[in-house]
Image (cartoon, rainbow, N blue to C red; front, side):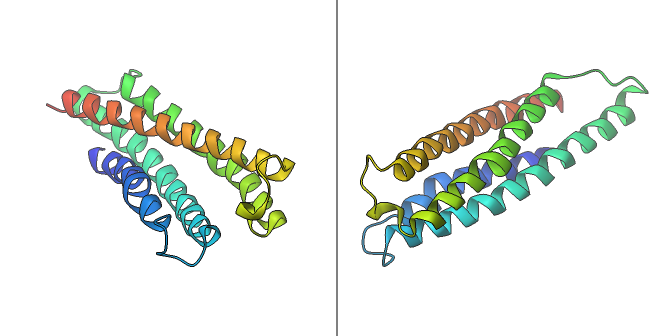
Length: 153
């Protein structure tokens, strides 16, 4: 259970605090568009890992509880946190990210559009939602790791 959470939360931390800032370091890549493409693709892969990790956690948690407490399956806070994390991740992966990818393709280079261009404005709006969802998943994940570690003592 803990391993699946650490993979998920660790991936978010790496993407947010290492990969994205590195990719957008001025002069490291030829364009910001390229950096955005790399980070966007990495986010898609992270979401896939996250969905697998979430289901592994839920299955492992049920198996662990059955082995230690019998047939009853009480709904613990950790389960609610993981389900909420999965919902946010799936909305990001299947609703927000595809729209952002489509807007990037439509604009060719999003940074070349004026800030008031409707495509750029929609992309920026979705980008804020994407960051907010990832921040929420990170916070919920940290709480889930703490709660799970406490419950496994």
